[in-house]
Amino acid sequence: MPESPHQGPALPLADREQALEHAARLILQAWRSFDHPRPGQPLPSERHLKLLSRPLPRGPSDARAALDAAAEVLDVSLAQSRPRYFAYIGSSGLEIGVLGDALMASHDVNVAVSAGGADLLEAQTIRWVGEFVGFDPAARGLLASGGTISNLTALTAARERALPGVREEGVAGRRLALYCSAEAHYSVRRAAEVLGIGARNVRLIPLDHERRMRVEECARAIDSDRRAGIVPVAVVATAGTTLTGAVDPLEELADLCAQRNLWLHVDGAYGLPAAACARTAPLFRGLERADSATVDAHKWLYVPKSCSVLLVHDAAPLERAFSHHEGYIPHGGQLHSVDRTLEYSRPLSALKLWLAFTVHGADRIRAAIERNLEEARLLHALVHEDDRFEALREPPLSVVCFRRRLDGPAAVSDRHHDALAAALASDGRLLLSPAEVDGHTWLRCCFVNHRTTEADVRAVPEVVGELSEQLLRAPAGKR
Image 1 (spheres, rainbow, N blue to C red):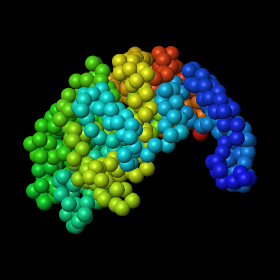
Image 2 (cartoon, rainbow, N blue to C red):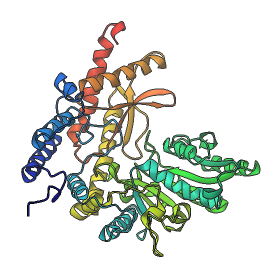
Image 3 (cartoon, rainbow, N blue to C red):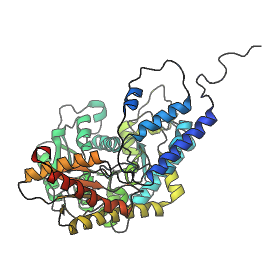
Image 4 (cartoon, rainbow, N blue to C red):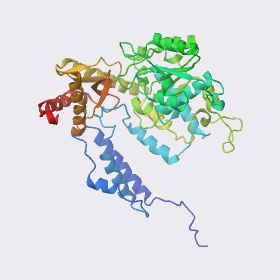
């Protein structure tokens, strides 16, 4: 009988062994380029722009040529894996995590429903994270696409506890409120918008001298709202603010929430891995008393995006907020992961983190975090000892804010630092971001990369000082 044209895959990859070997070479080439800083950041050329304005391809092409084109586009993109990328708190592409992503994508498991061994691996990874940061060695929870979704998921459970049945009945005219630091991540307000709480009902609690939430002010806000008939939903403590790395007083906030019978969520998307380090662990005292906590492993646990972990002690509040029964997902008396989360399409993001802990071990990952902490202290010392600069404060974690000392009005200094941030981006030897602190512009340097070295840290004041001098010497109209 003649062979049916429909036997075999509909979209076979021609020469897949050779394509795979070629992809491996490109990945290795990228890894080698990340081992050392490069002298500048190349921009997309006319050739890249032409490639990226092509119409939809109608026919096939060579896989290796397509991979080469993709690698070229990535090479002219900003890669957070590079050792002098200090602009934002992001991932740094841990190599075993990259391989884990490739393996995970090949199997394409969906852990929204029961998926056999993948379910066990995800649960084990969550327990490992809970133990590593000191939340709970028997932690439950889930993995999500990012801290925004993890925070939203936790606050959905908190809303259901504060107003049982709200997921079915809606808010129905009742006013709700959340409480967080004035420098909490915007994802808290975004969650309030999505959940019907309203951004205006997020109480931004004033800061103390260490830029932490004032517990007594939080208590006053809760009590005032209750007297006004407003339902408090949760307190969101930040364990490492994005702006300065401040850690809210978790123990005192846990006391407050216990007294007021309120959900305490810890947004540790950035900073919580530092709870595993001896020097910074005291900042996180009381973490284990929180109802829930977020850790973005694609930040300070180094794995590639996306890999956010939501930790809880008990999955029941999540199930009360999300469980459901549909004909297309038979339960058979057993709840699935989708009954504890917003997301239906759930890749096995835990695999890369499971591999990171398995291959490197918790002690080496902890040592890498400690090295980033030391790098932040080194930069603070360098700018503190340099008469050209001033530092905002000694970094509690790994974010350092500093700026050039300038005579004259603050507005002149702000304009200089805005221009300086742009000059740094154009120069490309290293990348910092401008940050607005107390209404003024500072330069912000974030250390969350396992590839960053002491030489990279020492380059920061050198390059910043050089470009600042160039701006100051330029004619007034060109500054």
